[in-house]
Image 1 (cartoon, rainbow, N blue to C red):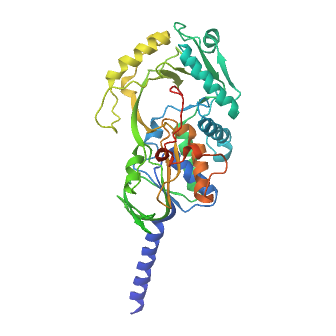
Image 2 (tube, rainbow, N blue to C red):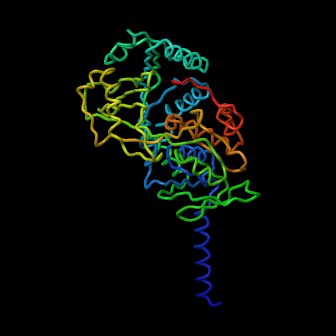
Image 3 (cartoon, rainbow, N blue to C red):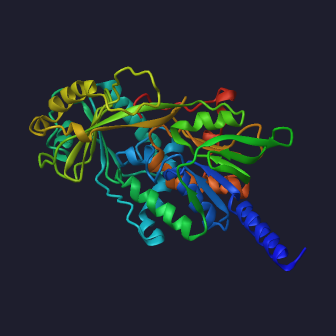
Length: 409
């Protein structure tokens, strides 16, 4: 072999080695939304910076994160969800100092309105859980209190409610950007417009050694499923069944208006889940009622749904009759629902190196700071140490020990 041939061989070997290195990671995270980005950041913060995040979107925030309305609350009916909120809140309060980006956390409060003794009883029971965990800012409120907190609410049919002043709002894309950019500075690689097509398993199919994608093969030490509404599909590629399904949620938005103040608390009617908030001078209206649809991943906004949400809005917040809906900017997004409406967090049963961060059931953005911190502990330390996450273990469904939450919270 002459000198030129030797050089060409060495150069080719270097290029091949760089390609292998580029497509190899200690941890490959599937899903670059706010939960995946939080996991990546918290891993890198602990020194595990050889992390690759793969996302099917063309750019950050194209999935559920970018569709979220940005609510944040501690008012849950189960201890584990309240603790997740408190852990996430601690991180949101330090977010700007630590990551250099404003998370948008504003403590405008959450106002839950009951229209029956049954509904108020559920709020009271949840309040006991919240206070036992350490949330002392939640208080039961009378009809008169409600009208002082939010004068726009029509009092007809109201029975009482609860209000928590430390609840409020965050900016989902700011939180995503903060975690993503900080993770990148720590060495994490984010790749977009790439889909996971399967895995290569070894060790008697107990370990994933490669992630197969539309952009080639990625060698891995561990894999995290943070694929949101698509988590069930990703899990099945590894031979794992998880009870996570997509659920479409629609959001109506008004044209710019001043009929409600920007600092109005998130106002929720327990009876049917109708709720409203103001964001950037527009009112967002939400209601869980859905028009039937065939494709579970379809996020086309269905205007037929507007009649139901507007009839509730105009009765309960009469001033909204003066605010026109901007149909061109209404949208729909997907929740990743688990069977018991709680996150699934931890190592997947049957596989040594496959981790799940799925099923947040509409609470993914607000709990992302805590979920990322906790799963990083599970991966690096073998278990979560900051808080007990046994209630979120992936095996609970097979064990028949699901979380029992209030029908309203």
